[in-house]
Image (cartoon, rainbow, N blue to C red; front, top):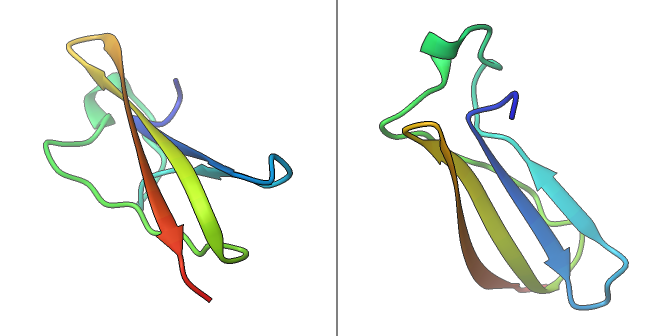
Length: 73
């Protein structure tokens, strides 16, 4: 994983996918992987429910956390 975290989102229509990286510069070495806190900002292209999956690395292991959000009009 090049970035130290990703969020991937899928709309219920199965036509729209989001791929989001944390704010800030892309890491250039293993020492620049980020944390312990970092932020994401995204702009939803349309209203509706999005199922989101966060991917981070903790002690060299991939960790995934699913959650969802409703985007209002």
